[in-house]
Amino acid sequence: MNRPLVSVIVPAFNVEKYIETAIQDLRTQTYDNLECIVVDDGSTDHTLEICKEIAKLDSRIKIISKENGGVSSARNVGLQAATGDWVGFMDPDDRMDPEMFEFLVNASEQRGCDVVACRFVIEYYNEFEITFPHNPNFDVITIEGRNECVSSVQQLINVFLWNKIFRKDLIKEMLFDSELTVLEDAIFVYRAVDRAKCIRVIDVPCYHYRYLFSGLTRKTKTKEYLKSLETIERFIHYCEAEKLECTTDLKKWYLFLSARSLEGLFSIKRAADLELYEQAKINICKYPDEKKCLPFLKRFYVLIAERSFIVYRMCIRFKGRGKRMWLTINKLHTGIPFWK
Image 1 (spheres, helix red, strand yellow):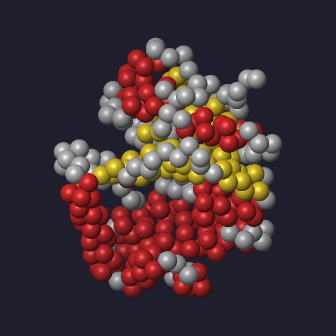
Image 2 (tube, one colour):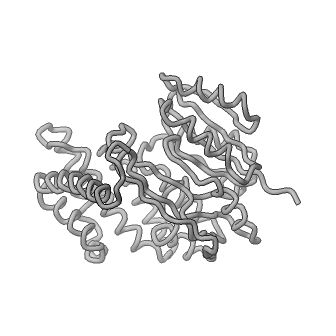
Image 3 (cartoon, helix red, strand yellow):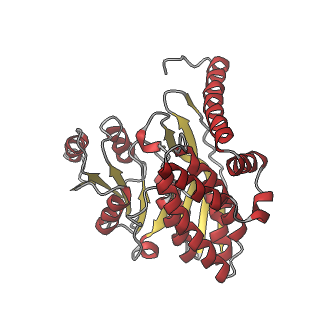
């Protein structure tokens, strides 16, 4: 029996430090019926040259070079080039376990399944690595029905692209919004699961999301966040009109993201920054009933952001220092050398 082809799309921009490792993780997958589509988005370092050299070693690797247009544009080019039955995504600075696609494809072999997801691990690169042991007897969770599928995003499968595969027929007419630079993946995931009839989740972490404290790609941009929040709010109105049960979870997520949108503002002395702050405050003041239902820490950040920008900035700084302190304590406790 022929196994389905999986197309894995890797958008790449100035990631010469990481891209070789990412592609190697794909090359060494135990499920070998893959095509790896690396879309170089106008890199100015050696990313493209590294990709071309690796592609000479493996015919499954396809390299596409384009002018810089952003991650959504790069993913759209990859989608148009994908020939697989299933489509997955990988960020070029992340890692994945060698069995990931074998597990996902095996779980997909149920009639009508449209999306398959796995758990993931967050790694604080050069700080501390959170790992989970493999469980050979992991459970596979099946979700069916439109309400249940859309609700599963916040409750179970998460908003990220990279821990999932999507049936190509499900997303063949979908594209990423090139106007968005943050949360574009979450919006794509919601649109996809709204079309899905069945989702399966394997209860084992296979994908390793590497959080780079100093990486420019992780920098929060308030203006871009606010633009994406407009799209999320339109989706909330759509779900309300369709009478989907996920609207409460979506509104709570919207409130938390509205508070997070302020993290990119270091002061509100300039008129432009003050205008962004006022817009973010309007967002934070929405949905009072859902605000009461937020978990304590998230509710705390939302309420502080609503009342005092200065206090909120102090809390954000403390949170960052506290995270680093926690990582240091874990290193001392586990005996991990500080230079790793």
